[in-house]
Image (cartoon, rainbow, N blue to C red; front, top):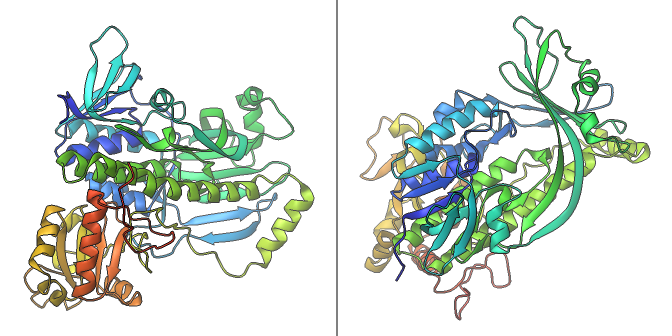
Length: 532
């Protein structure tokens, strides 16, 4: 039995990841305390990219439309030569599974104000800024946090360290990090165009593959732009970031008369991942758990994925549906997944950061000869799914014609979900299978493709178009079980296969036995004791 705690969850760190997690858990009815040493939000931009999956997470937070009004689609990604001529155009117009555009840019203070207001207005969420945490301790049945200033310890059932790259929580938990070997230092510059100034000729995203000076540029929406320049020839980072050394690099596009320099600083990009994301009642998320180069724009998004996965797994444990050992599933799902994003970001970074002229010329020849774009990078989860054509992949989110064309999650919520295109599959389920679905709080719905003017059957949703049905059909499936973080747990055909899948889902959540997808025996529940 757990000892008394002041809060269900304590979060150290109130950046976008801490704000996301606090909102998601608060919306599920849990008491959440967030502590942050800063007096207010950081006033300058850092992250600048969201993708379709992040937008689906924002749906779960109830703010996707508000955020959508504050950001801009980033449909153009150009690889440029030193003279700024186009070497390669990487398309971003592909149809995403989430129902949103593939990429967006933003000016972080604009959207972080929305994150902040949302977290602070969520019932059950308490935010304490100007509060520095001195120590954290896992007491076995709860976690203790001691703030500076002689305050009595605060107790919570779980603690999440979302406190950045230099995480105190990770350090005091004694969690090591693995270095994947990439490091590069760049100057990052944010500017705001002055009233009446000519709009600079900048693509949505542009990587300048100049071996003498690799650089990046992007339009962040409105009057805000970003440039980044790799430090070469062992230049001093402090000197390189000074305005007098930055403006000469910017004058190809803007001048002091047309733009205001908001920020010029240096960042050393790393590729690091914590050895585990959970240890007892202490968990890590965002930069506290992983760091990656920015070349795919996935840093903040990966932290939001952490928050989304954590929120549903913690919810099951806090409710008593799952044992504390279920939090191992957080590391099993997220660590391999984010490691793939880090590795791909490193691969892209090595291409962009090439300073050897001969190697750069060979790279350019290969890019010029490439006639087909690579498929979008969408890695499979590390675990927590049944192996198959859809297992561990993002689920398609259709628009529902019978609900005025809104996206599916806005109708059903972000929960464990069983969806089928054949209602008779559900009709044949046994009484025990139905009890298990109820125990696990699984939302169940039939999605039909009949015309919107027809009357759907009870419990049926009418799809706008046929994308969902086509997606299942291509996998020879007529039902799919989707995790609350929008990844597929399992898909199959017929009632018998669904009965087996429900048993596997129950065993996965209750940790009767671990589901190790993608390994020897994938798709089966391995017998024996549950690992702790």
